[in-house]
Length: 232
Image 1: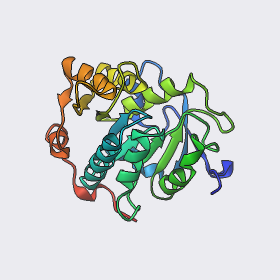
Image 2: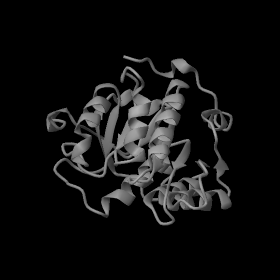
Image 3: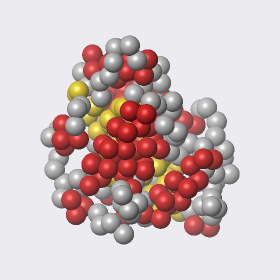
Image 4: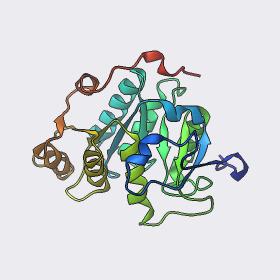
């Protein structure tokens, strides 16, 4: 698959009509965003699903299941296109026919897909959903790009679901940023012996809501019609 063509990437600047107002909650909102896909999706209610890149099979299954259910309930599932939980959440949100939207916030310019193994996923997201980045085309992955990506995920979302996270992880940064912004924070518990449960348990100790089913999340958020978007 080809990466998105630069000529198809749209730039929207802060304080213009299409710029997402939720990003203005940040102390350092992006001056502009690069967009590839259906820009109208920025108006939908968003829910983030994030977690470990080195997720367990159970974590992958949970991410796919929760994303599909929340997408079907009318929420635009947002994540960071990373390996593990992020990728599973995007695939789940696309649905069985891969024709529902999902939003990926990228840590690179949109003409570069990272990781490369997600080229096919990025193609499906671009067909029915949206890829966004504050990084100009041509900029590749750097460690400093991903915390900045995470703050965009946190700001755009009404709530953030963490599925598997180590004690020190980008997912916890995203959740804590979301908490500071007044977003709802959700976490799935796991075994006390599993290293990837420790981050979620830490969030739960700090007041995150314990989640056992998609309904637990839906009960905490505003209700949206299932026709909030139409499958293609």
